[in-house]
Length: 494
Image 1 (cartoon, rainbow, N blue to C red):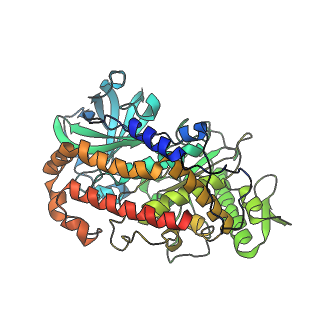
Image 2 (image 1 turned 30 degrees about the vertical axis):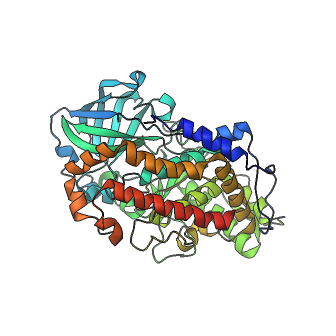
Image 3 (image 1 turned 180 degrees about the vertical axis):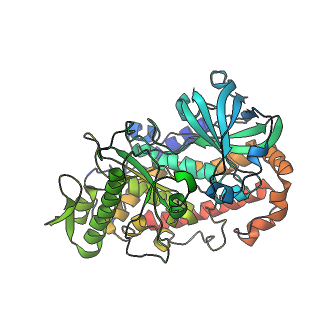
């Protein structure tokens, strides 16, 4: 059994190189979408797509031992407890075993708690670990050390691989252009010696060097020239109304009421002053206005020197105008990822962006850190058609505004061609089979522990998925659906 997929990736890359027929252009995309876009990747560009997840025959284990030896922290809380600000960290030690020796941990001091929104309603709940000192976990992120890590329960998705495949795609699609997506790895979790199941170890979505790499604000600094990370968030009103001021700061933007309920934004990075919140609200709303007016009305606006207001000017093209305020490649990458995954949540929440407003920052709205794909890949009722034009049917304002722009679709086609040459689509399909085969015994053990998930199903899923009784059946569904999805997009973007 292969311990990783490097050999497979090399074979795919070598075969793909035979298909290269012309050179990519870094110039502004053409508005003519009648021409096929095919590009040749250099060895350096191919290397940018070389990410491979760690899949080993022996799955790492994470042992969490609480100070009171109780598992109650992982069982008693529900979503309402979060809204009432009742969920607290408990003191614990964390041991990581069954991985490379340099990443073993023994009784590292930490705090742990349950995390999530509606996932708190499930019996097997996601967890968050906050170490007292920075630690690496199981070799993720090249061995870099951070205090905060998460363990995703993958309860809704019977295949337990939706998030894994989406993160692989994120690591290659976004990562090849220098944007952040979490690293990840399957682990088995034990709480106070009791087996708790298979989890997906991932990184906390946060502003830290190497993660969302906008600058962290210094304590007590009140200037607006800082880094911001924020989320398009359907739960923003709940964040705003959290008791004890425990929620994150929020703001609203007028998106022309593209849906009956328009999500707002939740700021995920530290801010110290109301002026910073007011600035990022104004900035975000004005960036949307610039994009909307240029695309819909061919009217061109730009920011004033202080980025506090916009003014009209005689713009040359929509591309030129928008590229001054939006990192368009990041939006192209996120667009492709979500067209592949068909994630119903994209118009609702877990849609992250950032902007660096410091002196050396590019001051462009950047889209990265994709998250939360447990409802994706055709498993949710009403979202199972692999031949649909997905993004155009969502209510995500940032993706909708560009979804019919010819030059934007040309950028999408060019990126799609790169992905095919690098073997991204083929590797994603191979990973589905790899997880099913290598971790078969681990999945069976997980569902022996959480038998209720198999027996009761999930009310959000299509009937086919709820008829399945094994991870293998759900995995085969994912493979077949994803294969058809790639075929559909290939017809659109080849």
